[in-house]
Amino acid sequence: MRYIIAIIQPDRLDEVLQILEEKEIHLVTVTNVLGRGRQKGISEVYRGHKEGGRLLKKVKLEIAVNDEYVQVTIDAITQGARTNHIGDGKIFVLDLKECFRIRTGEIGKIAIG
Amino acid sequence: MRKLRVWFLGATGFLALMGVSKLALAAGTVAPVINTGDTAWVLISAGLVFLMTPGLAFFYGGLVRKKNMLSVLMQCFMLMCIITLQWVMFGYSLSFGPDIKGIIGNLSWAGLHGVGITPFADYSATVPHQAFMIYQAMFAIITPGLILGAFAERMKFSAFVVFSLLWATFVYDPVCHWVWGVGGFLRNSGALDFAGGTVVHINAGVAALVCAIVLGKRKGYPSHMSPPHNLPFAVLGAGLLWFGWFGFNGGSALGANGLATSALVVTHVAAAAAGLTWSLLEWKISSKPTMLGMITGAVAGLVAITPAAGFVGPMDAIWIGVGVSVICYFFVAVVKAKFGYDDSLDAFGVHGVGGIWGALATGLWATKAVNPAGNNGLFYGNPGLFLIQLKAVVITIVYSFIVSFVLLKIVDLVIGLRVSEDEERIGLDLTQHRESGYTMLD
Image (cartoon, rainbow over all chains, first blue to last red; front, side, top):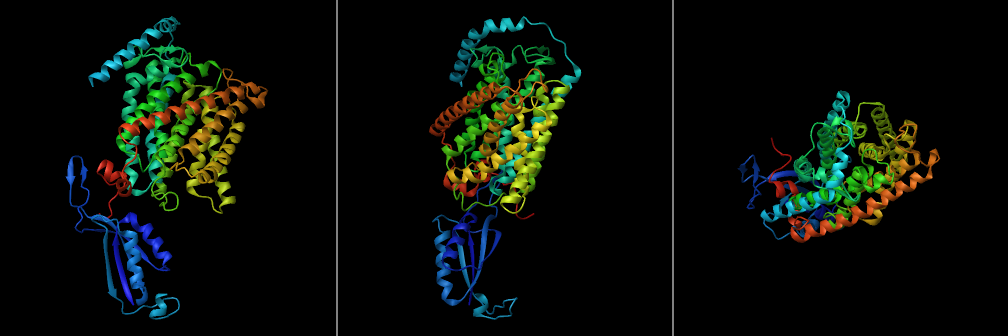
C-alpha cells in the first residue's frame, strides 16, 4: 500500500480528478494549500508597495492506493497536471503501513477499496 | 491627444450648429420655481440609484470565482468614475440636450454648459436642472455595469474600459435620447418607459448577449465551473439593489408626490411576487428553493416593473412579477443551456429577457387611472399601446445588438477583448490588478 501526495496547480484539479475517475481511482482527499517552490509568484502591489516572493496557492491531493494502482495514479496525475510550465508541482509516494475503514473495521488492502 | 481634441471640437461645432434653433425655442418657456420636497426626493434618489452600482458589484462579485472577485468590483468602480466624467463632459448633452432629428441630442450642453441650478421645465419643472442631470448620471453608470455579468472572468481590463466608454457614447446615449429626450422619436411615438426598462435593461441585456457570443465561453464552461464563491455577498448585493430601486423607479416621478408613491409601491410588490415565484418554481422543479434563485427572481421582478412603474396598479404589478420569473427561469435554465452561450451571470437572461417582458407588460397593464399622463394598455381597452411598446422593444434590440457587436469587434481588433488562457487560469485579480481578494493565511 502506498500513500500518494501530489501538489498541483489549482486550475488543473478538475482535469486531474476527471482522469483519476476514468482510471477508477475514486477515493481522494483535496486541500487548498500555500507553498513555495522554484516558481516565482506574480508579485502583488498594495497602494504602491510591491509584495514579492509570496507563497503561491496550490492544491494538495492525497490518495491511498494498493500497489498495482501506484503507477496508474501517478500517470493520471501527471497527465492532468502537466502544462510544461514551471510550477506544475510534484508527486510524492510514501509507504503506507496500515489502513482501517472506520465503518466496517476492515483492515489493509480491502479497506483502501 | 491633440487629434482627439480636434475631433471633439469639430464634432461639437457641427452638432451645435444643427441643434441651435431648437435650443432657442426651449429657452422660451416659462421660468419655473424650485420645489424643495421634489428636489430633496430627486437628490436622495440619485444617492439611492448610485448605491445600486456597488450593490451590483457585490451581487455579481459573489457569483464569480474567488480569483476574479476584485476584477468585478473594480469594473463597477471604474464605471462610477469614467461614466460620470463622460456624462458631464458630453454624455448628458448627447442624451438630453437639444434634439437633432429625434436621434440624438446635440453637444450644446457639453461640459454642462447651461445646465445650472434653475429647473429645465421640459424634464423637471420643479427640480434644479443639475439635480435631474446627476440623477440621470446614475442610470448611465449602472447600465454598462449590468453588461459585465456576461463577460465576467475573461475580459481584459483595458478592453473593458474602452468598450464601456464607447458603448455609453454610441449605444446608451442615443437610446436614452430616443426614449426620454425631448424630441426623441420613441418618446414622440408614445412608447412608455417610466424608469428605464428599454433604455437600461433591454439595452444592456442585449449588449450582454452580444458580449457572451463574441467573447466566447469561459475555459471549462459549462462542465467544470466552480459554484459562486460567496453567495452571502450576492445576497447583500441583491438587497442593495432592491433598496436602490426605490430611487430608480420612485425617483423617476421626479417629484415627491403620488406618482412617486405609486411607482415605489408597485416596484416593491413586483419584486416580492417575482422572488416568491422563482422560489416556488425551484421548489417544484428542482426540489429545493435556493437563495440564489430567490434573489435572481427578486431582481428580475425589479427589472420587469421598471418600465411599468408609474403606469400600473399594485395588483397588476403582481402579474408582472409572476410573469417575469416564469419567463426568466425558462430562459436561464433551459434556453441558455440549449444554445450553450456563456452569459456568465445571466445579464441577458435576467435584464434582457426581464426588460423585454416588462416593456411589453406595460403595454398590457398600463392604465390612465394610475397616471393620466400615461396611456391605457391592452387590458384597459387599448391594444395600440402594446404595438407601440413592441416597436420600441424591437428597435432597441436591433440597435443595441448591431452597434454593440461592431464596437466589440473594433475593440477586439485594436486591443484584444480576452485575456490569455494563462491569465484566465490564474484569475483576473492577480493578472489585471496585481491584487488578491482574499488571503489564505492570516
